Structure formats: C-alpha cells, structure tokens
Image (cartoon, rainbow, N blue to C red; front, side):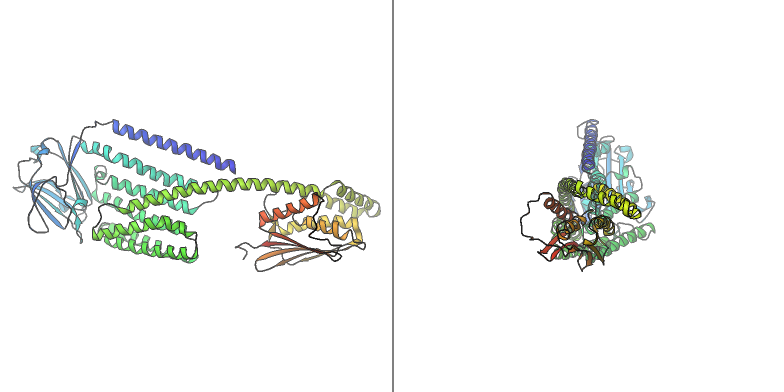
Length: 598
C-alpha cells in the first residue's frame, strides 16, 4: 500500500509539472507571436459631446471620461475621438443592451437592435468590429447620436454594459492574447486542479473522499466561470449568437453557486443538517432549471431571471451558514470547515447585496473562493502527510502482529507439544484405531490452521476461532483424559477477533491451572453480549496464581503480552485476568461493538 501511494504521488507530481510547463510554453508563444506595440486603445465613452440618461438633463462628456451611473436608456451626441484616424477598426462590445450609432441625417452606422436580432427580446453579448473608413460612415468631424437601451425591469450600470476599443487590423485578437491569455492560463490551471488534483488526492487517501471530489467540482466550475468572465468581451468573436454568449456566462455562474452548495453539503456530518443541506441544494437546482426553462420557452431569458436567482442564492447561503453554525455547536471538528466557508459565504452575500446597493467596485467572491482553495490545498497536503504517517504506522503494526503470530504459532507447536500429542495418538493406534484415525486428522487440521494464520491480517469470525480452539482442546483431552473436563456456554457469536487470540488463554488454563491440580478440573469457554461489547470468558477451577507476581518465565509472559497487543490493535479489545490461588482463574476478553453493531 505504501508503494502504491508513493507511486501515485510521483505520477501526480510528474503530470502536474508537465501541465505547468506546457502552460508556460503556451504563454510565451502567445506573447512572442505579436508585436509589443500598443494594438488597441480603450475608451469609456464613444463620443465627445453630451449625454442624457433616462430623459434627464444634458451633461457634457469626453470619450476619456470614466462614468459610473445606472440607466434604462441613455443617448450620447457628439463627435468620434480624433484617435479614430489612427486606427482602422472600432470595436463596440455590449452586454445585455441594445445600441445604435447614427449620423445627424439618421443614417445608421452601427446597429444592434431588436430588428437586427434573431431573438427580439434578448440583447445578449454583442461584440462587433467595424471598419473606421469614411466610406463606412466614420468621421471624427461629424456629429453622431449613440443610443443605448437596457430592456429589463431594473437599471443597469453603464460600465458593465459597454466597452469601446480603437484597434489595429485584427487588433482585438491581439489584445485578447495580451490581456486575456495569461488569465486563461491561470484559470485553466484552476480547472486542472479541480479535475485532476483533488480527485486524485481523494483516491490517494485510500477511499473515495467526497469532500475532495466536491471541492474538485467547485474548482472546475470556478475556473470555468472565471474563463467566461475573462473572455466575455471577446466571446462573440467566435460564438456569433449573442444569446448563446449570455447563456454560457450566466449558466457557469449558476453552476458555480450550485457546486459551492454541494461542496458544503459534502463536508457536513450530522444527519439532520445534511438532510437540510440536501433540501437547499435541491431548491437551488430547481430554480436553476426553472430559469433555464423560461429561457428555452422564450418566456424570459436568463438575464431577466437573475434578480430572482440572486435572492434565492442569498437565501440559500444564509440557510447553509445557519446549518454550519449548528454543526459547529455539536461537532468541534466543523470549526475547520467554518474557517474556509465563512469568507466564501460572506463574500458571495456581499456581492449579491452590492448588486442592488452598488457600494464596491470589485468582486468579493473571487477573493473568498481563492481563500477557500488555498485552504483546501493546505488541507490536502496535511491529510496526505497524515496518511503517510498512518501507512507507516500500519506497516509497523502489521510487522509486529506478524511476529506476534509467529511467536504464538511456534509456542503451540513446540517439540514437547508435538511429542505429547503424537505419543497419545500412537497409544490410541493400539487401543482404539478409529479414534486414533480421527485424532490424526484433527491434529493435522490443527497444524494447518496454525500455518494458515500467518497469512491472516484481518480479524476472523468467532466461529472460526472456536473451531480451531476445539481442535486444540480435543488433542489436550486425549492427553489428560478424565483430568480435563471441557464445557462450552456459547451465547454470542456475532463478532470478530484476531486469529489464535483465544487459544493461548485456554492453553494457559490447561497447562498452568488444571494440569497442576491433583484431581484435574474443568475448563469453561463462554461468550456473552452486552449493550456495548462482546465478551469471551475462559475460566478454570485449577490451582490459580498470584496475578501481581512478577513472571520470569520469558516465553509465556511475552506470548500473553503479544495476545493483548494484537487484540488491542485489531479490535480495540482488552484482556482482564483474575485469579485466586486454590480456586482458579478467569480471563475475560472484552471486544467493543462498532457503531454499525450498535
């Protein structure tokens, strides 16, 4: 197992190194393929002149002015910037708005209106490239009207809706490679981590850890969402239908939020809070399906349902945060989850509130997700280190248990035991051949079981151990005859224990208790079940001994310690030995029940 985990780590490291090298090569090639000169010029506003929002008063504006206000309709009047003479292309990128550029005589130069769209109620993401030649209607000394309208119920922020670029020929593609490719590589790495690193870590840890699988899904959708955000101004260059661009951007947002909820659910342990989290996830997914159905049915596009989805998202985040607090109160381990969940949950809710209040200028949830991702990577590393220590401890324990079983087996087949057993069988060959035949078969099976025990690394059913014990006591009965009486009082068999863990206790009872008593005695093997444990009781009415006496007999004492260690390591069991000189000895093995048995 240790070699498998080490090999998996090496393979993971090699693949990760290869991917990062490839990303680096792509980044270098993308930069070196183009000149470093300025290939585009960004303007917040298309025209120098005046503007009027929602039929309000006219205000002066320059194309270089940063404006930040909300509107339903806005009209700019003025001249194109003089820099348009230096660039052969002008690019207008609009998100969820209709727009048109007209000359003073009403001639349309640029148009993205319902009449130009296949779907007349959804603007979508529209990025259009226009030749700035005069033959195409562009001139910096003419007066133009640039109209923008937002067709949804709420108001829109101007800076979120319109971007204007003056570009060299194919300059927008060059700008894409300079500005967007580095971010794309970063977020592709995030997707790679989600698809490969966390699921691989889950399997390396020995079992399918759904916490890491869920966070891998979260990383993948986070990377996908950030990729669509990074290329949103350029998406329409390759996907010609603006509504599809809108759908991709919106759905990656919804899938990201859903993956956050499922990640949280995978970390909860309490049955009640997990059930409540399941319900929250189902509610959110149903609303996502509802929004998709509205879009497909042409009742309302995905952007029109976003205000409702924002409210549903806030409600779900608040509800899940309450569940987390309840989990922390009942399970101290959940504090580590709180550390990673709180920044993520709070940042998402801050962004949702800001959608309505507009008090911050950047996206908080990106910081929260980054914090959670770093935390999870550290947590994976710590878990792998812990797993490494556990594997080493397990290997050491298996080695010790193997040596203990060898010691027990050897103690059972010492020369004197073999001699006595074979001598008893030899005598029976003359006096009672059928019994001798049965004794020979039983003795051979007993030796075979002892040898097979070396291969056994897990606990075995009690019935199997009992059958082996009966073979041993059958042989001892041949030796001692009427001096050894054996009674069985088996009332519980539904448990497991290490192989060869009960026989040494019975052997000690026969060898040191009953055989030393002049008239012999009785050995009783009994089992009982309590509310939280299974009991195996080996008792005899032999000579007894002082349990506080320091033993100097070497082998038997070491063998008993090995038995206790095996029982403790493999079953968390304990051995209690009570003895009264002249009355006998009682050895009780207590095997705690597992949670499934209880």
